[in-house]
Length: 383
Image (cartoon, rainbow, N blue to C red; front, top):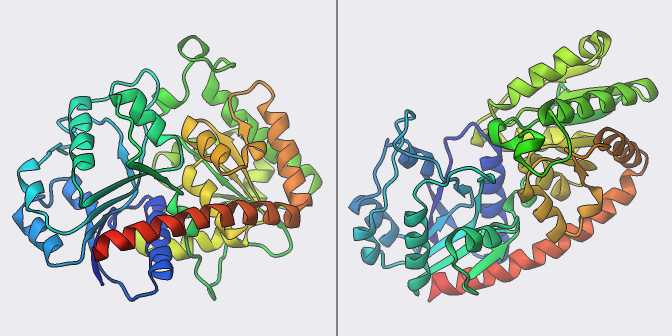
């Protein structure tokens, strides 16, 4: 079977790699047939380096179908802004697509109070997808279907909900990981400073319970790290997933005690999609991850790495609830977040086997949902 896979293959946000690797890995397992992947970089189209045109349609029609990978698709950006990107809906080509199209686990990132540009085009696109017999629309299990209903008024049983495919990311074997120190407790901290003007709003602009929320969230990380450093031989691995995270990483270093920064802390760098397996090998070998990012959080569940989700957005909370793991979450904006984060971190460090069993149960449940969805996908592709 030959499939075109449209995804962010040229991205330096490694979460895209986790999505890609997990999707392709599990589809190959569940289809039980060889898949020849023709990988198309969605980000090249986003930034105007390629066009969705007749050549693209021909590429699909010469394959057995198109898989549209589950990135953050619904972000409401104004693609006529200074970034030079653009927003196009080339509907004139849609009727020319003769092969099946599967939109796989699409997701959103839009904040309360944030304007969603091109909302009319979003609604029109969803209606069009749902009208085609050869198209299957699925969204990620992070509240995206509920968000689409709220934004567009569209509610349909034809919109499937599937697990985040980053759960199934592969970590590379047999490589040296220089950040890991065997004699210490290796603790990954993944920051998230994306969309900070919306993510970290003051009390007067949101329902959160603290003033100066970004400082509060950062303070919880600093206090937790300093307390842990007092009682265990800690090795903190600061793990940015995208460029925005370096701002918070830098603020963390400026706030923590000099000895911890100098002797007990190291930072990783970004990597491209092709190096996803090497990047997540760090996670697999870590004793604990404190995760502010979706694709720090969900891979830990699949890799069996004890993890505390330090949440700043509804997508994370919704995912955890659906995964049966809401009890491990720490709301980063709660007034006692520092205490809760330290308490959960210490519990996970002390009880790793219990946490791995808990994660395995959640993983197995979601893997079965994925398996059933792939049965539908395979039937569509072979119809």
